[in-house]
Length: 314
Image 1 (cartoon, rainbow, N blue to C red):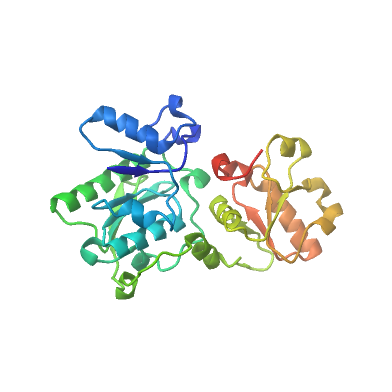
Image 2: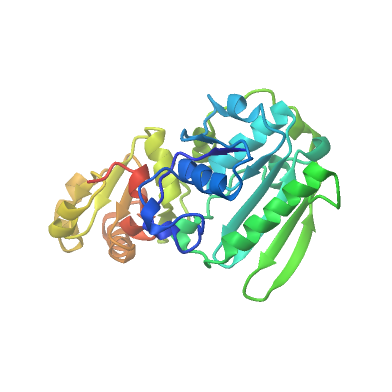
């Protein structure tokens, strides 16, 4: 069993990731997982990998395993895993969660439908659980069902969720299964691409309806930063808040925004943020109404939606 995760345990993980405890905060998740699972069963051959899965290493990481269980929370990684599994002819089990709902499916099983058959293009409106929140027990429910799919594949028993999306509603305890067709073209992938760029290009800085405040998630902002896209970040919090914690944007408090129009660019995307998203939304509404800005994006959830380990912060 191989475990790959570049992230470290954060206090906010503990309400849903029961493998970790307060003593593990700051430690690499893959290494902690290996240590604790080895105590449960010392006869299992466990390997931990603290790298980020990328186009450069994915094929080498996956090639020695029979199947992949993907619990990632972002679209670039899901498309990367899918394409690598298609190239290597490996089945993979995917689980995802959103607030009170969970999804499970199996892709590339017996050369069946792939993740691209279900999602030909990345969604731009699905923040991860760190950004939007999730019912604490839901990852455990979905994770156990993912393990069940993996066991069915390994043992060759039951009906695998290939070409089917299992949907679980935790609030109503109702389930449904949605079938989808295979697109043969999606099985002809023979190389990996830049998946951050692929997902960013789908964003295309959507304009929205006139007067509407356009939103950008923390995950989308992270991809823009990793891709080194030319953007401007405006922090409309007070100077005291900015000095305590910021992501190196320009600090223009909301109350002074009208006096510093010359500092805000109109030729590139401008990401405006505050602590939780309220003040930045007001700032954008003002700038769009009185100064004809059309290139402004509100950071959904504000700076509190950001994961410090993934952003350059101080």
